Structure formats: structure tokens, C-alpha cells
Length: 509
Image 1 (cartoon, helix red, strand yellow):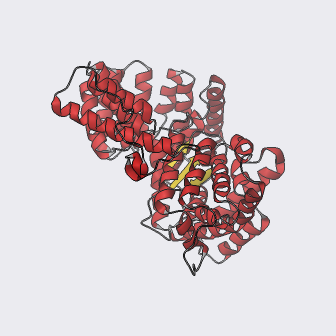
Image 2: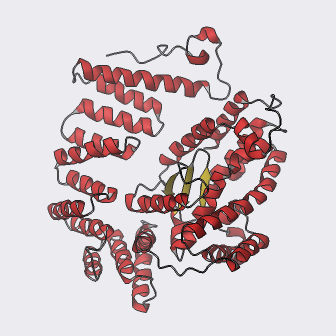
Image 3: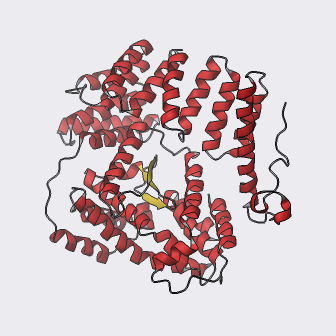
């Protein structure tokens, strides 16, 4: 990931070299940051990081969890200083307590953060803080502040630090290639940014109807854990240094705020329980989760009994104890009250070998919860598991129209097309899947394989040829942006001196 960060730094160095002329009379850092790092370039960098993360095994493709986090994030955005700002929230399966904002409007949330949050307001306080980083353009302003030393070095440092938020182990090697002075400048500058993000996040919580007292409570709990285990502090603390002054500032704001008693929604409790049960998918982790939820139920210490039984059922499923999962599910008081109970019931039936029963259950659930993507995808995967690929393809066609940017849709399409013997459509779907992940070379290869199947009419083959051409141009652009790549002049023949798109492009069969 840091190689990507350094490549981006070089791109920015070309775009705005150190010492280049600046617009006169810039009133503040925010304006200067826009001159140094345009919104288009921010989005390009953010998309690059996001594609890298999507290919990582820790990226959580769970529509129930990601859908909840996206919904919570959008509720906070609507209460923020820029209600119309576009932000994509995603979840990583990582036990470390962490969240991080990226350039271009992306916010990542570790599953460990949700598990550690004892209320939805605590989780919201961290997301609100990260939204503050985005709306105040802290990363871009950091780049602008470091322009006096070296643009490439500064951007490399900032983006390496950003990458380290999701994977702290890469920090040392990543930062080794950046100038020490620039790194120190970024860290020093971030203290002011942390306080500013706290204030923005606090205002978001207040306007959004959350419990603002949850913010200092959560920060204090993290700070205590840092003191107890100094060498293994939560990664959120390492990337967002907590100070007594910061916590005191938030505490003072709480004193002047109106107290709101808030009951957590059931979805928060269910998502938290599911993550706790499935965090460690090994047999020891499953047994530990069974003990945890059994104790919670026995002591009646879980926030919601139905959430505890859901967690226990998932823990039993993890350990292949189908009877235990069935027994736990049977103790849920009102299993028809939430879509997450339907998906759990279907998974238990599938695990018990009753695929047709799971399919019937999910068809009914899809009618009750028409807007639930989790139900739709559970229905699709269940239909595939019992060989009903035409039904799956019909459902996937609708999903592809609604969510063109979701690589999971095309991955599932490819599976059903392969089962139906439709090789051209299979390779086309895989091509779109890889393209959305930013894997351009494999995407091109898949479209070339689609063309060489001997299937399809002139119109279909023309569409494939057009996709190959577009992807090949994108690959040429990507390669020319790599450090050390030759930059051709206007005579090179491509857009802005890019190489001609036909050069080296895969030939027809």
C-alpha cells in the first residue's frame, strides 16, 4: 500500500512542484489546500486506496454490518456541517479499535471499534470525529502545510500515516522513505486537527440526537487501556493521540449541553453481537464466543436478550454445532421482528442441509424487507447453493442496475453464468468484477477471454471491444503515473501526451 502512496506522491509532485507559483492572497489553509490538492486528485487518491483495501482479506463483505455502518454514517452526515457531502463508509474485519478517514470521502471502521462501543452513541462519536477530519480537509491541509519543504515527501508521509491507521505494522517501513522533518511536521500539525475534529464531531452528535456524553466516556476508556497496556495501545489512540486537554475540552462541552437519554436501536445490538460471534472464525474463537454469550445470557448482562441469542447462535454455527444454533435461535422472543433474524434462520437451515427450506424462508423475507440488500444477497447465494441459477441471475440483474459499482454483484453473476454454461457472459462479469477492484490487467484478460469464446453476436462483441479499449487506456494512464515512468511529449499520440491506446493493446482472436 505504501508503494501506491509514494506513486501518488510523485503524481502530485508533477501536478504541483515545490516552489510553484501560488494564487495570491490566500486567506486560509483550507483555500491553500484546494490549490495544492484538488478535489479531483483527492478522489483519485482515495479511490486508489479503497481499491487496495477491497482486495484485502480483511475487507468485510457483510451487507448487514456494512449496511448498518453506512446508515449510521449517513445519519451523522445529515447532521454535519456539509449535509450533502458524499462519504463512503466501509468495515474491516480487525479486532483493533480503530477508524480512519481517507482522501476522497472514504471512512473505514474496524469491527473492533463496534464491538468495543458500549452504546451506539460511542460508535457515533468516533465516526463523527472522522467526518470532522473530512469536512475540515485535514489531510489536504497537511499537504499544503508541508509544501515549503518537499511536496513529494510530505504527501508520501501523510499517505503512509494514513495507511498505517488500518495496518499499524506498515508504519515503520512506510515512513522510512519520507523525510523525518516532514513526518514531525505532520504529527505536530495533527494535534490541532484532532481538537478541531473533536469539536465538529461533538456538534454532529448533538444535532443528530445522540448522547454527547458518550464521546468523553469512550475516549477516557481508551486512555485507561493505554495506561494499563502501554506497549499495546489501541490503534485508534496511536493514530489519534488522546490528551488530557482534548478530553477535558469535550467534557466542558458536555457540561453545557442538553442531556438526552437514548435507547440504542436493535440493529446496533444485533450487529455488535454478530461481529463478536464471528470475529475469530477459528474453532477456539468460536468456543470463546459461545462461552461469552452463554455467560451474558446467564447473568442477564447483555443489552438485549434477543441480540445475545443471535450471537450465541452464530457462535454455534462457527463451531459447526447446528443443534446448538437451532436451540439458541428458538429462544429469540420475536424472530419475525428484524431482517437479521431471517438471514440467521436461513443460514441455520442451510447448515442443516435444508437449502430449499432456507430458500422459501428468504423469499418470504424478501417480500417483508424489500429494501434489505442483506436479504437479497442471502437469497441469491442460497438459490445458487441449490442450483437455481436462473432465479439468482434474475435477482442479480436488478442488483447490477442498482449498484453498478459493487464488484460482489459481478462475482456472483460470473458464478451463475459459469453454472449455466454461458462462458462469454461469465468472463464479461469477471472482467467487470476485476475492473471495479482496480485490477486492470486481469480485467482486460477476462474480456479478451470473453471475446475468444466464439459466442455472441456483432453487437455483443463490439461492447467487449469497447470495454477492452477503455480499460487498456486506463492501464496505460496508470503505468505512466508510476515513479520513473517516461513521460511522452505531445508527439506521443495519446491524451495529454499519453502513449497511443492501440500500442500493445490485446489483439483479437
